[in-house]
Image (cartoon, rainbow, N blue to C red; front, top):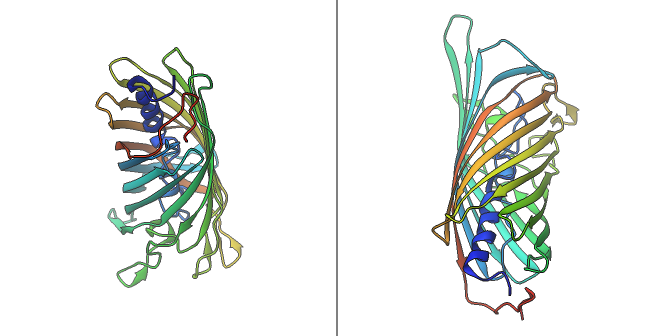
Length: 328
C-alpha cells in the first residue's frame, strides 16, 4: 500500500496546508528603520508530490504597535505600522526527487506617527514585491513503511519589486519599499512525520536569507527562521495545528555602516485551523501571536498577524507510484 489512497492523500494535503504559515510572512526586521520585502516568509514549506501542482493564495495583515527597547515594552502609543499582503505561490513536483516553487506578491505598507501638535504623519509604500524561485531536493518521501518527509532547497530572491519609491518628492523609507533591490540567496528545509495510525503529524521547518547590497548601498540584515509544530487531524476533514517559531534578524547596513535600531530575536505561537474535506481544495486560517521579543535598540514590534490561505492540489498526468513510494 502506498500513500495514494483518498485518506492518505488527505494527510498529504493536510501537511501541505499546515505548512502554509510555517514561517512568518515578512522577511523584514520589525524596527522603525529596518524592513525588506514581505516575501521570504510566505514560502509555504510544502513538500510537493511528483506530478502535483500546488497553487496557494494568501491574504494577510500584520500590525506593529508595541514599542520595545531591548526586551522591555515601552508605554508609547505614538506610532504604528501596518502591512497588507497578497501572496501567490505555485509549486510543482517534477519527479520523486525534484520540485520547484515560485512565490510573488503585492504589498502595501503604511506607517503612522503622532506629531507634537496632536496630528498624525502618514507614509505609504505599495507595489509588487520581489520574486523567489526555489528548487527543492526531496531526500525522503513518506510511505506507509516510512512516514517521513525530508526536503531541502536553495534558490534566489530576485529584485523585481520597486525599492526607490517616492512620496511627496521624498524617497520612501527602506522598510516601506515593496522591494529590496538586491539579489539574495535563500535556503529552505522541511521534515515531517505522520504518526500512523494516529491522527497526529509533527514537523520542523527552516528558511534563511543572505541579503546582498542593493544599488543604493543598502543591505538588509541576514535572516533565519525556524519552527516546529504538531497537527491533529479529524475524520471530518478539519485539522487544528500549533506551531512555535523563532525568527532572528541581524542589523541592516548602509554603505557598509551598521544601522542602529535594526535587528531582532522573536518567538511566536501560531494556532490555525485547516479545512481539507473538499479535496483537492483546502482552506487555512491562522494567527501569529508574539510570545517573546528582544530588539536591537528601540523598535516597533509585531502585535498580531492574521492570514487566510486557499490552496488547490492538482494532480497532473505522470508516472504512477510503486507500492514502496517510488515512481517509475
